[in-house]
Image (cartoon, rainbow over all chains, first blue to last red; front, side):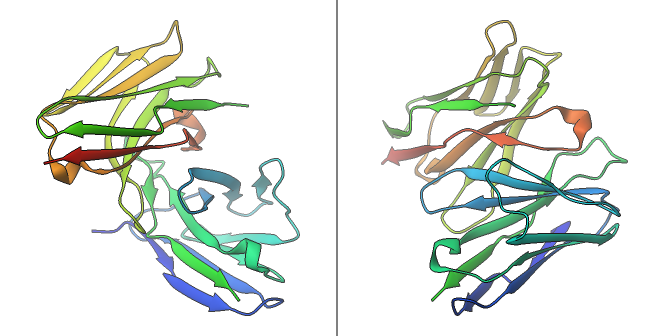
Amino acid sequence: GAVVSQHPSRVICKSGTSVKIECRSLDFQATTMFWYRQFPKQSLMLMATSNEGSKATYEQGVEKDKFLINHASLTLSTLTVTSAHPEDSSFYICSARDPGANSPLHFGNGTRLTVT
Amino acid sequence: GENVEQHPSTLSVQEGDSAVIKCTYSDSASNYFPWYKQELGKRPQLIIDIRSNVGEKKDQRIAVTLNKTAKHFSLHITETQPEDSAVYFCAAAIYNQGGKLIFGQGTELSVKP
């Protein structure tokens, strides 16, 4: 079963509004989670590393004030797309790895964001 | 930072033939190389991975080879089936950094019956 849960799976919002996406680790505590964005027919691009209890680390070119990341607990990271625009429409996927086990990275099911 | 290049971008094979996808990476510190299969609108699914302490790993019809000196690794699928059709991504990471993956551009594999 899924060990990383992402919600919502789909969201449609109007330009200028904000959208929050949640990523939860279900069976383990994740001090680090990762957020990716995927445009149609393109690869997964790492946006940021979410660190529990501290600031996220953003990749070059990703606006930290637009994509707010909060990792307030060991099982939950949230990504908020602020003042969304149509060009923010994309597939957003989170991932996490159980640090206590020799396990691979687990991905959430992704969130399809459409900004109208 | 790490950069991963993947080729080809599209690959069409006849059912039963083999398919090979190749990737190169730039950061010699990378030591973990997974391959993912992604179907339309779904999350990537890990199909095989390899650590830098081995040169080859096989799981039934799927195998991955790694050449650390040349910084390249390849996915081999034998006896392809129509259900193998999907987009495949390679990735590279430093494993003990918690799984920060850098992905290749993807290969759209089409297996024709």
